[in-house]
Length: 477
Ligand SMILES: Cc1cc2nc3c(=O)[nH]c(=O)nc-3n(C[C@H](O)[C@H](O)[C@H](O)COP(=O)(O)OP(=O)(O)OC[C@H]3O[C@@H](n4cnc5c(N)ncnc54)[C@H](O)[C@@H]3O)c2cc1C
Image (cartoon, rainbow, N blue to C red; front, side):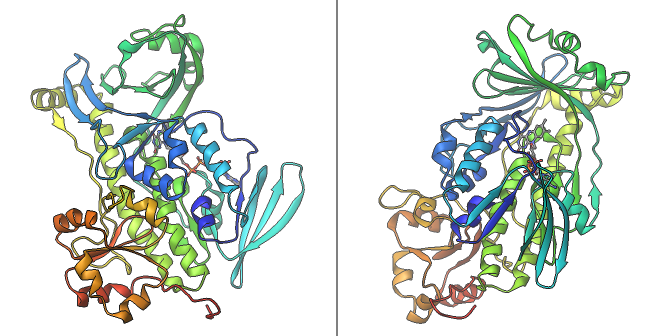
């Protein structure tokens, strides 16, 4: 969020309770859309050097029979990135932290906890407590609570949450291999064994993860002890081949906060929503929040758009998040089934005809900036331009128009004036994509979703009212 807001030139203060990056991995997977957000933040190349392409995920039953297959292509897809990556969360958090140092307008306050927040006229007033014990206050026009599942900001907003009904306890074990174990494989495997549902994940480098569901009779305090962990991992690996980096019990929740925006308060990431991790989409959803919100916040703070633009944030993001939560709960049901008759029925159905999963890119919810058109609210392809660059590298975290050369040439000057300050792309190389989607021009938002498409100048003009208008130097906000 701060890396994107920094590019917009906003004055930002990042407040973080811990001094160091949390050293242990939680998230291990992100997708091509998230890589595009890192690209918009100018950090994709650095991040790409630390990740590993993920070939996919398989669900198998206790007899090793395939139930669900979700292969991921090994070639670059329509986002100009691979569909799925494995990563080490502390690596990326470190890169993001260093990234904000590029911006003189972004300040970072580490070892500082927000202990109160209240609205004061058109500002938010925060009470801060430093790790030294010192107290101070800070005032800002907006606060975005990216403060995790136990969000203090959500508590101050007093908005409550909706529980989507998943509360399983799982033991998460991260191992550091001391010897090669290529036979463990690169695919994520969901072992749908009713005796103990288990997930194997090939993390980056020599890290491997097992997640094991707690069964009736398991004691969460005992199951994390190394003897018990090795006993549980015995079918795959033993203590002579690896060391335990950590073993911890998590409760996997499926929750959404009821309001993500209330006046000058906003929520993003786990503070706004949590999902069981079976799809590896929790952090991805938070990164999408940042990408959806940062340009809106910047436009409102700069006076280029009215405050109502912020209402579109939850309207667009909540149904998108819910798509992934529902899918995670459904697949979690396949994995976590322990009832004998349900397991038999599952194995009978899926064992004879395994489900083939393909990655979908859900549409954003309808909002004031997301018209009712067929393409609006869909994630755009990342096209290559005439000189071989990717469109996102040309545009940055900003609006752009991709149009056919003829169409763009015939745009009236009045329309071009409204678009002053935005990137207009009229490359031949964009034609394939425009033809495929049946448009003469499409307006792309900074978060790479399609604002709208036009087949005529009149249609195009009707989209313009949805674009924040760049203020000229000296023009009052
Ligand atoms: C086992 C497991 C596996 C997962 N796998 C994946 C995966 O593969 N892919 C994926 O996308 N997601 C995955 N997730 C989910 C992912 O880890 C989370 O969604 C993500 O870390 C949430 O990020 P966040 O920044 O919203 O919150 P957090 O990571 O919780 O960060 C919140 C930050 O706010 C700080 N903070 C809290 N309160 C205050 C305060 N009052 N003042 C100042 N600072 C404060 C905290 O110190 C913390 O640094 C997984 C989660 C788990 C548990």
